[in-house]
Length: 125
Image (tube, rainbow, N blue to C red; front, side):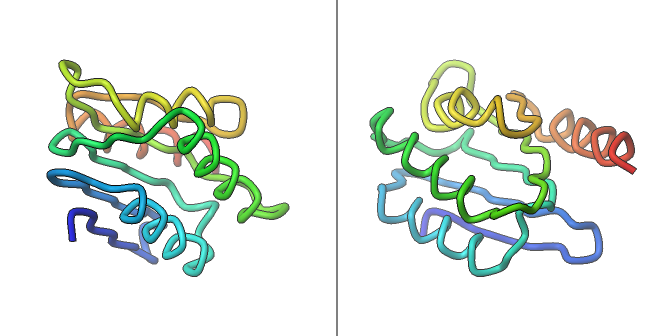
């Protein structure tokens, strides 16, 4: 599977890593796993730097809506997206769709994404 999902309950961080060609079905399955895990308040790091998608803006908007509605009244944690700056795609569109709902930023380095998540989590305490 081109999408790997890991939930660290102690750190309250979800790590999602995508590799290769990622389909709409792959993304929807990952969204369903997130919703089933009931972790909207957890920080999330989404690494799409080694992935390619063909999602349309409408599909990304639908995914953002599902995540928003799946959170119910729970607060939503910050999201750091690691991207390949030479290849814009899913993460940029998701950030655009989710910017009003939660802290979300794009990074080209996993180290910087982790640092920002740590800083953001400390600010929320």
